[in-house]
Amino acid sequence: MTTDSVVYPLELAATLADRLRSAKQELVTQWLNRISARVAISTKRVFPTHELLNHVPLLIEGIAGYLKRPERDINAKAPVVAKAMELGALRHAQGFDAYEILKEYEMLGEIIFDFLSDCAEEIPEDVSRRDFLACWQRISQAIELIRQATMSHFLRLSSAQVNERENRLRKFNRTVAHEMKNSVNAIASASTILAESWTGEAERKEIEAIIAKNADGLKRVLANLDSLSRTQADSRHCNNVLLPEAANEAVRELKEAARAKGVDVRIADQLPAIDVDAATVELCLMNYVSNGIKYSDSSKGDRWVGIAATVEGPDTERDREVVIRVSDNGIGVPAERRNQLFQEFYRAHGDTVTGAEGTGLGLSIVRETVESIGGRAWAEFPGETGSVFAFALPARRRDDVEVTEKTSGDSPTAD
Ligand code: ADP
Image 1 (cartoon, rainbow, N blue to C red):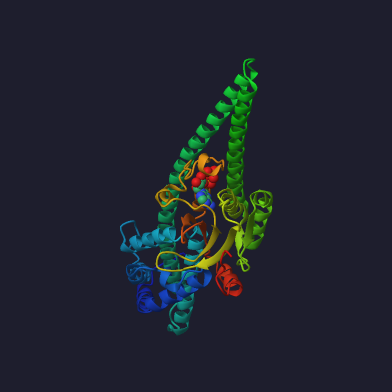
Image 2 (image 1 turned 90 degrees about the vertical axis):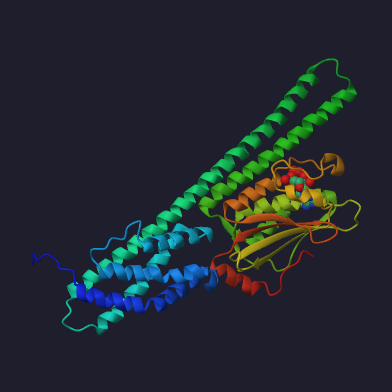
């Protein structure tokens, strides 16, 4: 057993560092190709900006520098750490999760390891294995340090986002509690009056209507809160279903409401068979489709609501996403009121115009829910009448894209 203190193999380290440097462009290309094979982001967008594409090779450069100079530390001030943090910010913006970032660095480790294995074949026989291992250890340390820099920056940004979401949720809870309190108070006062002996038949009817209306309102808010909590619970349990099944389920649940209003709910033929989060998609579809039914145009003979879905992107702005659209030929929304849709308690028509009761909470819950899983929700008004309410969910898994490419030859439309 030897007790020699280990001497760092400077010469070998310098040779390997130079090789790493000269191969850096090639190594980055390999890395990029492997990453984009895993996630459905175009290669151009994996390192999207010119700046990052120029700077990512600096990570390899940094590793090579660390290898060559044993006295060098990779600390917070090292330029390579700044680049690693930029990568963390980029991945956060692209909606990567922590696991994917770890995987990405694992791949970088593998690529560098393969590269060094090739180098090992070529180095002179008198270079000791121990020296070679010392170099590998130093490289592994460097990879570990830049991985930590990327990861800790990514986690910092994620936790800021969680805080912001918590604040929004608290505000949302306050508004919902306020709304429920109003309804409960209205019901309580109305029942007190009902108990009084002076109320005549006409007043009784009026008061009963107030109670029924507020109880309905409460029921709707509770149903939405229930779906919302199911969404949060389900996202932990990853309860996924295929999109066509989720659409069928929503339509089945609303069958009676549609029949009562004489509205035909149609699902486009070729909904892509993509795995989606069951509770989120059902919550969104239930709200959109029930609105399409509620705000149908009674002056039209043929009243319909259509569900269609397509996979869009990637483009310079976004990665691939599944876009689900619910169109209708209903009463539409006046142009000057469209901006406020999706705000809590905003009702664009008011009970008097449509006779449709509601709380103005449904759309805000839809938005809240899809945004919580990295999606978005919006409305479009392409025609003279009717509306299109849409939501998009990130479709970053390669499997999803392949399924879509197989199933959706042409883009489905509402009718
Ligand atoms: P609610 O239907 O309970 O009022 P929502 O948040 O679901 O609440 O919708 C907010 C408002 O947006 C509705 O009050 C209505 O004015 C308008 N709206 C929603 N969906 C439609 C639609 N499909 N057609 C016309 N207006 C709609």
